[in-house]
Image 1 (cartoon, one colour):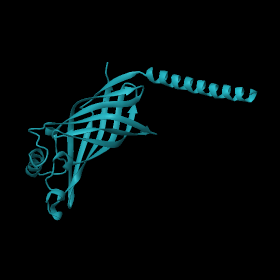
Image 2: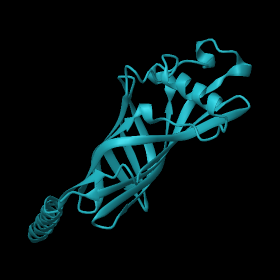
Image 3: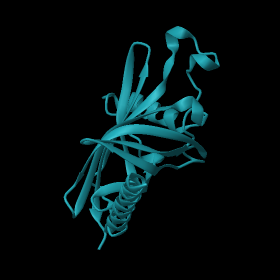
Image 4: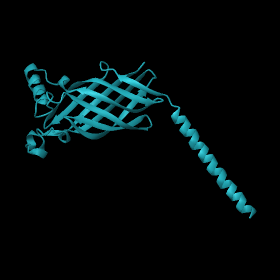
Length: 207
């Protein structure tokens, strides 16, 4: 009987310690400072790359606004808006050919920027793994939203946040089907379905 009482006390003590630990952790999390950082559009760089048979094209595209939220120093969410009409091509020197390519990318065959001038990335979850973080969210292009996930290296100096990563998306999921073999394009003239966005994001603490 005495042994049973001792064992019961040990178990109850263990539960009490565990409960105190959870309460302490919850208090620590709830006391973390919540902050908002505004995206610095002039310091942020987004480089797009599209590949085709025998080559590729690449250029830049600008962000127009956005904000990031943090708990303590950790990124927790945010949203970024991209100006689809700001798209440039950096690999074609000939001005006429360059203009034709950009015009084609902006028309109905591709991103139809007249009707859909903006794209948007909403960050819904961030999981830190060492120095890297896995960012999950929703990407909206041409009014169509799909979930995406990518790795990023995130820095936070307190007054400024930076994030560097590569987001790869399947353009056909956003009704950008031109040149895809999935929709009848010849194999020797195919354009890859995946488009990559190399993002170097800079955001400054609000206030």
